[in-house]
Length: 80
Image 1: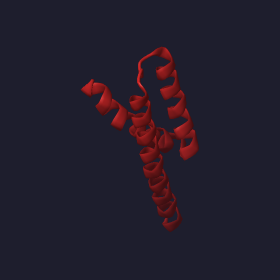
Image 2: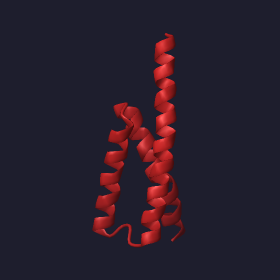
Image 3: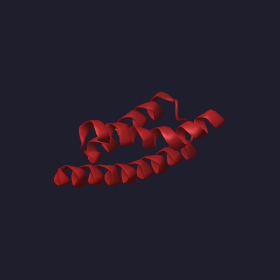
Image 4: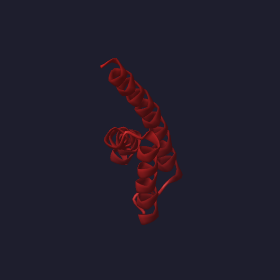
């Protein structure tokens, strides 16, 4: 139970950040993460509503952090 809680809090947000960094598009990173979370819920790995809610909160925080990260990268590219 605790492993699912910790995974739901950290992994979706990290996944959004990593995929946004790879593709340089925050919406693509969010979309791919949403697809992966949906598939895991459909297959039965995420089986309660509170885990799905924690996944959504984590993705929202990850999206916010990815937006800030990509903004800083674009500012750094303008300075060079």
